[in-house]
Length: 153
Image (tube, rainbow, N blue to C red; front, side):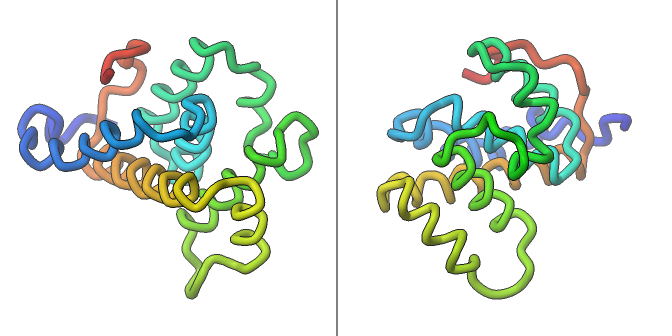
């Protein structure tokens, strides 16, 4: 996709609001690797190539196993995700693919079993943030493949 608007350049003030999510989440007790895994999966659901490129590079730089990235679309059947990761992925998918009404009780209860209330709030904010970034990139395009690890730190 050709970049339509250089939103991170032209919309700095507007995007600054979104950057606040990242600043807040950088202090979250949630594991950085878990957040990147959630960002990767949500970006996959939203078909955001720029974010998939970015988060796959970040995950690999952190030592993530390539096999886990290759099969994340089938995480429910794959044996190499922890219960905490499974709860986070189910929560993220439910918030991303809103099908009307509340998140299912089974998904909420599993998330509550794995995360403190503060962590669940932070996880929810992280899902909101990556969905927002995905939508900005999908709307205006982004130069896929240009991301360098740590570029937005």
